[in-house]
Structure formats: C-alpha cells, structure tokens
Amino acid sequence: MTTSAYLEDVKAATSRDGEPRWLRDLRARGAAQFAKVGFPTTRDEDWKYTSAAPIAELDVRALQEPGGEVTAEQLAPYTFGEHGWTTLVFVNGRYDAELSSGLALEAGVRVLPLGEAREEMADVVERTLGSICTVEQSAFVALNAALHSDGAVVHLAPGAYAAKPIHLLFVSDALAAKGASHPRVLIVAEPNSKATVIESYVALGQATYLTNSVTEISLADGATIAHYKIQRESPRSYHVATIDARQGRDSHFVSFSFATGAALSRTNVWTVLGGEGCGATLNGLYMADGEQHVDHQTRIEHQKENCYSREVYRGVLDDTAHGVFNGKVYVHPEAQKTDGKQENHTLLLSPRAVIDTKPQLEIFADDVKCTHGATVGRIDATSLFYMKSRGVGAVRARQLLTYAFAADVLEQIELEPLRNSLEELTLARFTRDDR
Image (cartoon, rainbow, N blue to C red):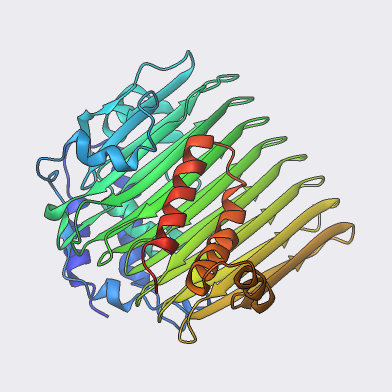
C-alpha cells in the first residue's frame, strides 16, 4: 500500500522547531512506529473485515491552514440547539476562537485548545499526553502522535464539577478536500470530579478527506466522565478515531458512539478498569447505507475486583453497506466479582447488506458474572403484520419499526438535548422518503 505522502508529512512534522523536547520525542516515537509497521492489512486480526487500503492510497496531505468562511449559522445544525454550553470549534483541524463560545467555566474546570494548554497546563499535558494511548497500540495512533497539530485539553481539578456539557466541534469544509487532520483530545479528571464531553465530527459539503483522531481519558479515583462521540462526516470522507480511557478506583466511564457519516469509518473505544469498584458503560448506534463501511472495535479490560461493565451496540444497515463490530471483554485473574454484559444487535434492511460481528469474552477469574451475545436479522414479520392490520401502510410501518429498533439504544443517553437531537436525526433518516 502507498504510504509515501504520509511519510513525507511525518518527516516534516518531526523536524519542527520551537516545540518542547517531550513533544518532539513523542512525535519521533510515533514516526518511527508508523515507518516500522505501516498501515494494517486484512491479515491483521483486528482489521480482518476492514481494509485500510483506501486510506493508505488516498492522495492527501496534512492540513496546515483553517478552512474558508465558516459561519455560526452554518454550525447551528450541529450544536443540538444549545448556546450556553462550552464549545470549542475546530475548522479543518485548527482551533477557531471566533466560532468558539462559553469559555467562562466553573472553578476547577479548564478547557483549552491544545496549543494554549501546552503552555498554561504544561505539567498536566506533558505528564499525560501519549501515556494512555501509546504509539504501539496501532498505526493510526502512531500517525496521530507524529502529525497532530491541534486539539483540546479538558482538565478537572479534584472535586470539580462541570455543570454544563463541554462540546468539541470538529468541522471539515470544502477546503479540507484532499487533506488530512489529526486531532488530539486529552481529558484529565482528578479525584471525585465529573463532566460531560461531546466530540462532534461534521462536514460542510462532500469533500474527500481523512480525519484521524485520538482521545485520551484519565479518570482518577471517584471521577465520572460521560463521553459522547458523534460522527457525521462527509459521505466521501474517511474517519478513524481511537478513544482510550484509564480508570481509577470507584470511577465511572460512560461512552456513546453515534456513527452515520463517512465512506469508511472505524471507531476504537478502549478502557482499562484499573481500580476496585469502578464501572464502564459503552453504548453505540451505527447506521449506514449505499456502499458505506462502518466499523466499531471495543475493548474493556477488567484488572481489579468488584467492577462492572455494560455494553450495547445497535446497527442498521441498508443497500450494500458493510458493518463490523468486534467487542472484547478481558478479565484478569485478579478481577474477581466482575459483572460484565455485552450485546450487539444489527438490523439488515437489504439482502445485500453485511455485518461481521464478534463479541468476545476472555475470562481468567473464576468468580464472575459475564454474558455476551449478538443478533442479526430483518424486521420482525409479526410486528409488521400487526401494524399493517391496524391501518399503517407497509412503507410507514417498516420505517417506524426501524426507528424503534435504533431509538432503543438512544434512550440510554442521559443528556436530554443530545438524546432528542439524535432521535430526530434517526427518525428523519428513516422517514425521509418512501423507499
């Protein structure tokens, strides 16, 4: 596979002047790892059902400048109707101060673009960035480590509570065409702190580009982070995202992934339950049609006893869309009293749609309660008949049953404005025509 353009960008990034030594070292490690392993192939078990060849062969270069005249009005459909939230906007991977708002935060809560955070929170950023999601984890993480130029840092002091959600909005416009951005997000929650963070990846137009993001989340003892990732990229774009969390004692990590955009997308959600009594809730909804390919990989690692995990992913696939779900729950020998449940359910609306699903349990402790399962099917004929017998037309009945299937997992979202907006998007997707 072709990687020359990426390697040229890596060479340029690692020769930058004016960056602190630790950052130059991180870039160098990422560059060396990417040069060593290159892009994954379908011979790699984690990429068995998703080919990275279309990304490797893209004629894209790292974006150096923001886009054109993006306005607040253009962003309105992506803000969930909320204007009081803390919102950092990035256009083509670069922070835009004029479009950002609500930066006056509660005591102990700091949200800054990455460049500013490296100066104002140097100790936090240097200590944490690259320590949770290491370059050895994947080629895309290594590439991000070498090439990231902007992003956001969220820091919560001990006991701090962010009363309003924090929204990180990454926008790609027409000038992103044949470009690549590598956003980096760092969330550090000190003991007993709490916040809700939303990452949105959206497009203004239908350009072809690559987004390769990495989010690192550190949860100290007693911390709670609710993290929502919304992927609504251009239908011609490519999107790879990695979310990696480390959890301390009695912490709780809530993750939700919503994916409807991009020609090819892959989202990795990983967490390590590294303290007693902590929990992880990983849910998601993916919807694809046409020739879209959407891939979710999750990994929950139970290291300590008396922890729980819950995971529900649902998918709706139409036309010749291809979905992939690979969820792994790993229980260490020391993780007694583990309680883990994992589900993946996929609805196929077309005989040509494909899903490859592989929920996995690896258990090395003997006192656990762990279950997993997957279902794949079409719309229930009995339910369809019942609705038709009550006077609902066949097309509308099919649409409403599909929406009900998808909306079931959306009800798990506790943030009401976000839940309502995603439910509206989902309903509109299934009632937009009379197919």
